[in-house]
Length: 195
Image 1 (tube, rainbow, N blue to C red):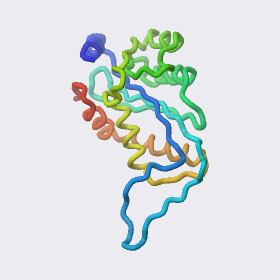
Image 2 (image 1 turned 180 degrees about the horizontal axis):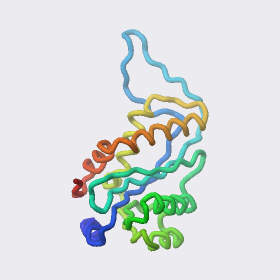
Image 3 (image 1 turned 30 degrees about the vertical axis):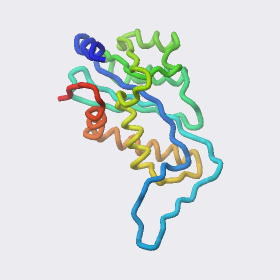
Image 4 (image 1 turned 90 degrees about the horizontal axis):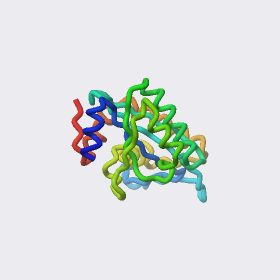
């Protein structure tokens, strides 16, 4: 990973960490407070296997002084190559044509030639794969953990649209909290210097 960071610095490129996840209609159950003698109850829809798939990017600018978060929701679908290519094209537009390097895991949807073609077309300068079985190196994993165990915990959803709206609003709230995004980077065992 050290070589990747040096290449990004030498090329004056931003670092973009990308990952995918899914949010289920059944809530992540956490311990909570309640008045004595009143056990909190969570009612949820049984046999509801629908989900909202999400792809997100945590972007560090070339000067390492600013963080941005972008995401796209896919209700009732899995993240596959077409969703990854559409996300990368939109990401390049959002980054205002600044050069960037992508760092992500070895998901099969990250490997096709269509994806690699996009990643070697300016402003993208290429991609690097994280080591196998090392999700702790991707700060976007921290984002998923935060969303699932904090704002979306103990909240059952009865329709896919309700889950989509809630996931979208909580994702948008995190986008505006740069200190929280910075904490995701700082808790990853990579030596990234942020200013």
